[in-house]
Length: 355
Image 1: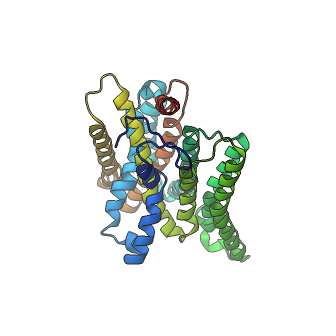
Image 2: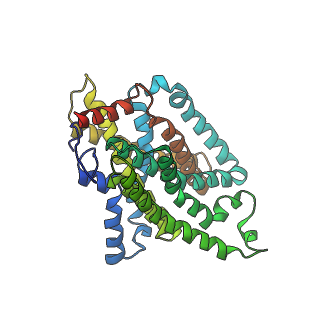
Image 3: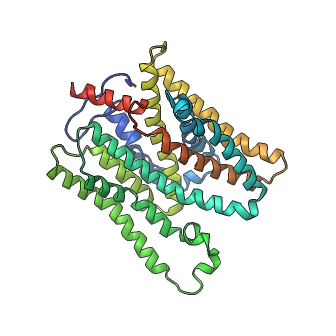
């Protein structure tokens, strides 16, 4: 992983962080387009639901990815001084609200779950959009405001598809029990048709935008920007809802861990106090994410159970609270404010690429 060097490429490939194979497979989501068909072909579609395998996938990918935002928050240069409320108050506030929710699980728990389930596909879509724009910027492809706006709406199409496909778990679920949802008017046919249309558009419109940018802009959109949008669409448009969530959970986690680790390592390598190499910082960061992920998702629910709370509410509400905390933290740690560590990483890459 040559994270400390300036990454160069040209043409459709774009400017990468580490190597085109690494960026396209892990950050672009290309690995999922290889692994998922292979799993379905050789093992069967239910392999991810096998209880013996799933916990390991969750720990190494999903749990570690949720922990990564917190590890990044406390290791990002200047974050604790710039975000004192987020670093010092929000964790205690989250723990307090979580405890209150577990006390009143019958009253509040359902709504906490609805927030988490509704926010998750939006979070995935927003990450895909952010990565696509980032690679455009780094590759010298200056998208117009209208193109960015179009890309944003394309990126969140899978989010709208999930909202419609699981209506009772999201919008309507706030106001109406599921057993009453379809009792008066059977409008499921129209909903199903709309979700199919959204799925097709999520796969077709990125290609349209890619062609438009190539014809109208000075420099074309890199393929990895197209790939990262389309893979998020594939995860939700091609597979049934449950399978889509499982695959997205795994590969979104891998995608997130890869990009956040790159930024962490580059910050550490640029520090004048650094005495270690790339491999050390990468292993240290991922190791911290694994340990924190295990503590949050495995130990914290058990702690509530030891205090006398039920297993179901302890596990489900801890998962929901960690997800929501991750979404909030993510909104701050990726900002590119003037003088921000993230901006320095990106500007150093772009400056090096133009040299």
